[in-house]
Image (cartoon, rainbow, N blue to C red; front, side, top):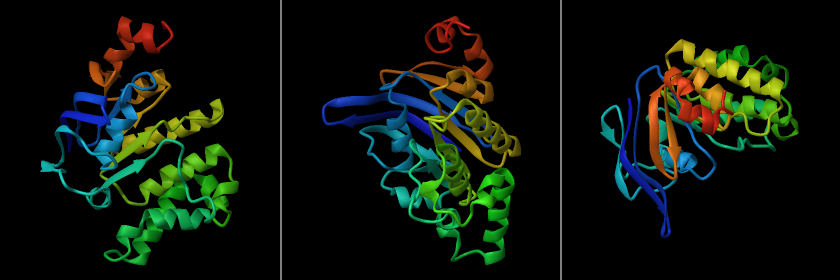
Length: 239
């Protein structure tokens, strides 16, 4: 599915990602954890084609993504739900969802798009209630739900989630992670999750990687990393 092989990312003379290799298999949820500045978001941006890599390769289903634009990676089924949500605040909730499906309009019937909207509303009932509301007037939690829902409108093969809990109240965080778990259970979308709440990310993960200073330091199953003394000490508060 997704293979990242020995990838490097630099900003000027600063190396943000240093020879990272990770893999995401069909139906998996893989979590990336690490402190701020460890290279997680830079790696996600490289996968999505938002920044260039200066070494290594990234491929989807065996196809090298070198020279393929971010837009064309979306066409390949890659949806990126970025940190800080980045919804279209002046547009309605419904308009935001429809924008998420823009690549499908030319090749699919309106009824198929409407079916996906209904699926998103079933996952996020609050979005149904607020479908005509201006998106920027919703709470942070509701905006996060909209950002994920908009990404799901693509019917992606790969869903990248960057810090979905950021800035949310604990009760909303629970709701967001319950939804991520439900998406995982369908096994129709592979999920690459970056999350500051490491214990939540590892609970959901089939496999996980720890990034430190742009390098993969530890990898294993979610359970193995939860039980790792090193990971417990550094990221799980010693528990």
